[in-house]
Length: 408
Ligand SMILES: *Cc1c(COP(=O)(O)O)cnc(C)c1O
View 1 (cartoon, helix red, strand yellow):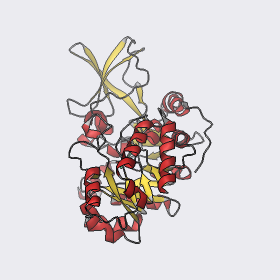
View 2 (cartoon, protein in one colour):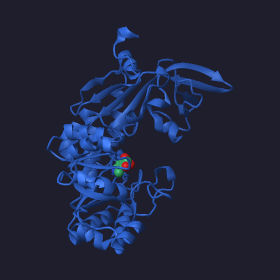
View 3 (cartoon, protein in one colour):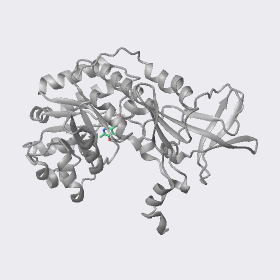
View 4 (spheres, helix red, strand yellow):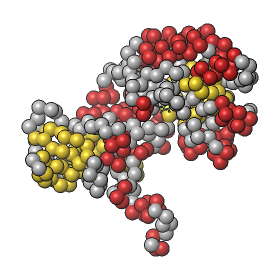
């Protein structure tokens, strides 16, 4: 797929983070998760601009954001979906029909999930040699089967996100594969592809070029016999650097080994497209600091707590005079977003916007304390705002094992 990019590199950021929400945020009921189709489109076009004429195919992994409407919107811009479970595989197939391919990799394949995975996946990268032995026959004639490789070239410093960490559970270690192949313990018969995913939130496509070169150097004979290489995700189009090296590495892979090459960036596609809108529900002093309690919680944006980072808030500047400790409304003492400074005083009822919240938020949010999930809005490509889903007390009851309201 070849798409001309006419928008500037920063178009999606400007629209996603500052212009549109001013218009949108007064209209929604909070807490709200608002996503914008135009920003998804711009992010996909930006990734196509990075890919250029290298011939790399673009997939979207359902993992960071999986709204049905958003996924349907992506279809013209992508070649397929990547999935990590039986549910994602079935969902991806439903959205795509026959208009694209479904690519699976998971460390947790088990017999209970097998039938659904076989029915819905076109490409499968087994996570280990034992999974290859156990499950490959079941996929034969249904999917193109490969292995997830751990290239053993760590590029992420934080081990929580590092698929090449010591004793990694993600992929067949490169040295184990070369050893097995060299000793004739692993037949490459039927091995159609390799999958590697080693980075996280990086704009440096030169690192991906290095990883490709590293694998080429060690697995030449394996690459000679496969049909596809999936380069995983973890790279951001908006901050792309060393794009030429990436394109030439992809071009070389395709030419030298005759393989089809895929990339499956998640966060890059959806992060700028999502905003969180929240309202201040209480303000008080706590030992010299003004606490602003919000009608949301870190459980709506769980990575804030998991990874202890401070999310962006529109209007915050370090030099502004009015400081607030923004806190979530659950009973957890650590349910806090951090200290932010504004040019005006916050009041009860003031709305705040957390931009760039499209990735790994909704998919991880939960109802701890019985606090409802955010209401979900979609800003359609033509600018219309639609309420997409409002969660109810019935949903909460259902989640807690009550199927019929009357039976509580
Ligand atoms: C998480 C993941 C992705 C997407 O990663 P992003 O950091 O969101 O781009 C792609 N492929 C695999 C195998 C993954 O585990």
